[in-house]
Length: 506
Image 1: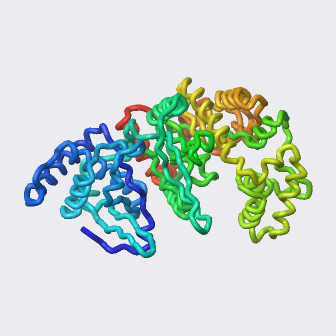
Image 2: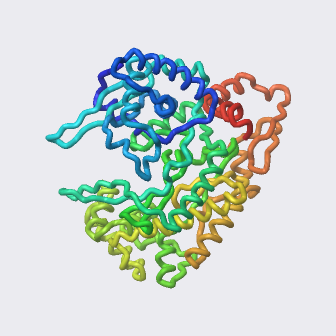
Image 3: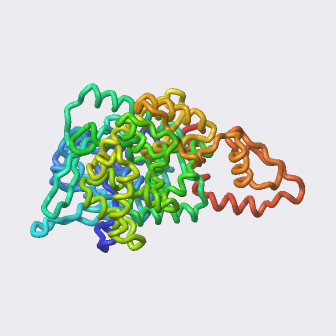
């Protein structure tokens, strides 16, 4: 069925992923049922001469898993897909064997059968602009999802999906930059990076990573993510990729596509790994320690973000200094500092800040306005790769957020050791970690546990500060409060139950 959509609704979409798969019998049961119905429809179509059953099943699997994934993440969101044959050409980034003709035939048949709501795309040759087609599951298809008891964790990624991504950039009139993926020949470096990432992703795939917040707070987070035009929160999206830029494997290389990277920073403290609390630890002034180290200088405990006259505005200086390192020219940097902070500061103040930072950092000011940041990202991605690998070898899940890492609270000491060792090995100077990190068992950690769990009842804590059990005495038991608490976290407990049911462990 086709439907009319507003411009706003069309914009709320997610691109189709042709590399989804599933090994779950519930998914296969739904696909087999639909396969029979689609084939019978094909037989009634005089234009259908031959049916390639295996390819049709592959198409239906990809379509249904994408529609399920989008529906579970956001019932209002649409799935964007192309009806152009050029999008189905095989490449490093498109390794599936889905044929263009059979794909469109499957989509159009599901529309006719009432399982998909669709809106066709368009292209305006005059404006050279267009929109891909959109689709989402109808109420009939959602009913089948529920009937076959499908869950988000049943949506898996093919191992063949490329995780080492190289991008180039074109600059058009008006200085507009457009990035695009670049094909490349494998080298020892790319093969090793891919193998390392497969090790990391394999461990991530085996563990339950979630967000332990009440349902209303989760909805608030979803709205914040939408406002910032980030990817929707899909708890099954744990497969990391490395993205390199400027057609070079020495520019960028950071890790992306983990759902935890999309949520606002203040909510990351609620992330759980296998149901346990986590802690985030980040490097302090990482890029500047690297730059100074390249100049043969160890800045020790010096804070590069403390500038005379702006001692109480460290956050502003930190943003300005990072802008300066990433900007291609001095003027670009000054304009970015101004626009990033207006109306709080004037253009004149932005110029003064730039000059003050040059005076503060004479040994590295030659890198200011040089676009050096993309090279520094490559260095921090090398560090992140080794930190995650070292911990993975000890079966410790580590979630990267560029220069910071999230682990279970009980693994914080191992994280500290890995961060210090890897930084020293690669940069050749000692690292500095953020002061906010707390150690399990410390007074600060115990105070946090008490704040989180309160004083009522006699509670048993595990070594991570999580409540293992509670003994209530008489009037301390409030059944209404317990029921209310369970209702507030209904979705979190539902995902926990699905993981235990289908994976069999936490």
